[in-house]
Length: 254
Image (cartoon, rainbow, N blue to C red; front, side):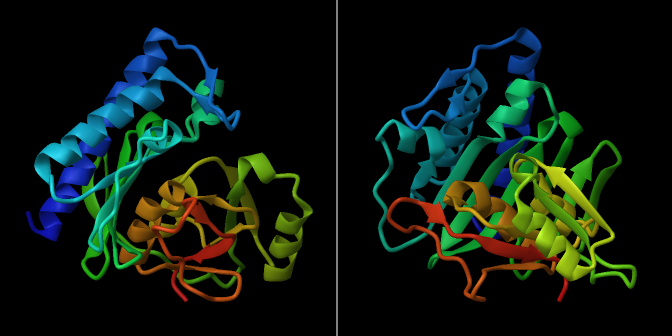
């Protein structure tokens, strides 16, 4: 399967997982706690099983690293080649709270960098996908269309920031320093998608995340012309021990 086929595969599985997640929400669910006290639901597990099975069946040579398998101590061993990073439900707290700011993230890593990915926003009926060097697209009820990040407009940037860190003074300080026209507090990888489609300009992150939170959306953002680096300007690397992503700044067009 070539890389365009892998984009199609990831987007299709993200779309199927989105339908499964919304079915769980409609039926009702319980919220449990993992060993690190983060929340998990039946939606996380059902979506991950669907995605992991689909990836392993269609592309058996590519290892899959998925959040809930890692939490259960079942992470696949990596060789020197490509691997998938999967977050079956990014924004479990938002999902459990009844908001729409949660995503499904499927990204492919090669040589430590994301090369393609798909991000579904189940509550919004949107799927974003892209391949680095080949462009990005968005699909919703209006159909599929190419998307592109934008340059900061003359009136100043629109900044997206974590809804869980809305009170962090570093966000306000950053927004003031950038002359922001607006700050939108949004949960999950949706923030990257709004950068990729040109609805926002900057996303500062001052705390660590997990690699499966950022792999797919970074691929989409880069494919759309944007970029992302740590606060010292270094590109993020994937496949590190512990699977941690350092603090970063994501942006639209430079």
